[in-house]
Image 1 (cartoon, rainbow, N blue to C red):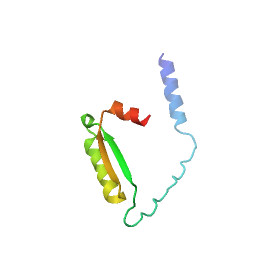
Image 2: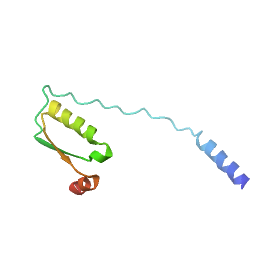
Image 3: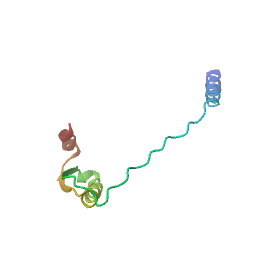
Image 4: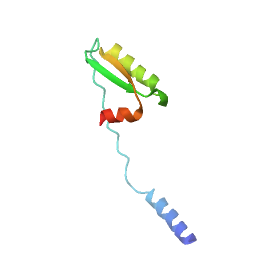
Length: 87
């Protein structure tokens, strides 16, 4: 049993010392925003107030209204009902 533990530790130590190099991460730049936002039409946000998502839903809705020109409608629902609407 002890030999198995020592062998496993040795195997992990050797595996951590491989000669693979770390690749440089690929970076992407965000697209240039359009001045004045846009017109996204209507936007419905379903939220479950009992799970603490209400504030997040209203923040996203406010950004959608102010920055994207959306008409936001909020639907207070349960998580179970929201997933049924998505499916």
